[in-house]
Structures are given as C-alpha cells and as structure tokens.
Length: 250
Ligand code: AMP
Image 1 (cartoon, rainbow, N blue to C red):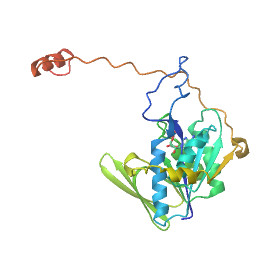
Image 2 (image 1 turned 30 degrees about the vertical axis):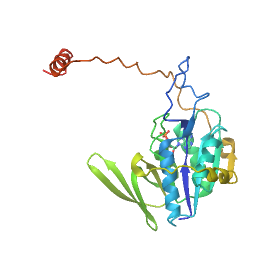
Image 3 (image 1 turned 60 degrees about the horizontal axis):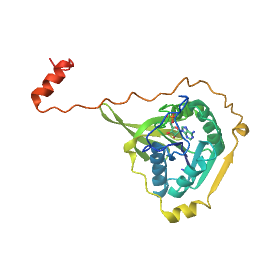
Image 4 (image 1 turned 135 degrees about the vertical axis):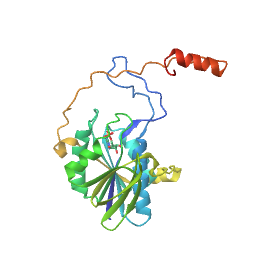
C-alpha cells in the first residue's frame, strides 16, 4: 500500500498521578508530563513495522490539539514516521469533531490504512475510530491484537471473551488497536535529531470547514473517593469472621 495514517493524541502521561482542578471542571495539565496516548504509540509501532516489512511506502502521523502537540508529533517522527500533520486547536476536542477533522485529512491524503488507539486514556471514549469509519464509509475493525496485510485486504485478530477472533476486511480500512499488538520501540537520540528535519504541517481547523462547537458540556470532574486503609488480621479465622461481618461469606 502507499500510505498509512496514524492518529496520535497528546494525553497526560499514564504514570502521572492525576489531580483535579479546584473548580472541578477538568484535570490539571499545567506543568504535568504529557505523552502520546499509549494505544496510539502501539498503532504507530505497527504502521512502522508494516512499512519496514516493505508493505507500505509512507507513514503519516496526525494529531488534533494545541500547539504543544508538536512535541508528541516530533516523538512520533523520531520513532520513524515520515511526516506529521497538526490540526491546531487550543481547546479540548470531542471525538465527533476529531473524527470530522480526521475525515478531511483522510480525503486529502487517501491512505489505504488508518490506525488509531482503541481509546484515549484521558477521555476513555472509544468512539473516534468508529465514527471516522462511518464518515469515510471504510471497513473497520476494533481492538486489534494482531494485523496481517494482504494485497487488498487485512486480517485482524481480536481478543474476545471466547478466545481469539480473526476477521478479514477490505482496504481501505480503519483499525483501532489494543494493548497486546506489539511493544513500541524506544526513541534513540540520533533519531530525535533526524526528526527535527522531517516535515510537520500545521493546519487551521477553519480551513477544513469543520465547526469546533461542542456537542456536550462537562458538568463536573471529581476524584474517586480515597481508598480506605486496610486492617491487619492475625489468622485465617479472623479473616473469616471479618468477611462474615461484611456479609461476604455465609
Ligand atoms: P477516543 O475515542 O477519544 O477514546 O480516542 C480513540 C483514538 O482516536 C485515540 O487512541 C487516537 O488514536 C484517536 N484520537 C482521539 N482524539 C485524537 C486527537 N485529538 N488527535 C489525534 N487522534 C485522536
């Protein structure tokens, strides 16, 4: 195939202990380490492996978000992507709006394969890939744990409750990827230097003629209740009594 498009979202790094803003409107992102959404890193790794096996010519990465997303796109370029596109918008963007913007990019670039994460770890929506597939009218497969590329089709293995399900879908296709697809590579210093010379186009959403007006309003964001501290029991008998007192055993 000619092109693979990989969608990368900038999110709070998964190792960061999340703090909520005092006005409960959002989580704190100022001064917090931001990274590529982990599932998107897996999607990019897969695209790079497909290219390295000679089955694709170009890997393009795209992000929708503030100017700072350039940092994550540069990391993606250092991993091995050929070029990057940032659709720059300073506010939070909802999955449907992102899907509409990505649809415009798909129309411009005409990739045969579009890879996304199964979900963004900040909003846990699990919507963007499916919405994009509908907008593009492309075949789609979600939660991929293995991919193998054919001449005009794709075999996608998914982990389901019963075991493994393998589907065949036609290209062009949209696939959202799951955790066990691969282990993304580490970025090496020389690659970071080389990535600085790669192309990173910045696009204004107005030029794509997509309204950025939100479809919903976040009413509040609150932290989960703090975990109660545990108790120490001296033997199995005490454990049984404690469980019985809570009604957890008869
Ligand atoms: P979500 O539907 O928000 O859970 O996101 C699912 C996937 O869509 C993510 O793993 C990304 O691959 C892609 N995606 C979501 N938001 C963005 C964004 N702002 N920029 C680029 N890709 C995105």
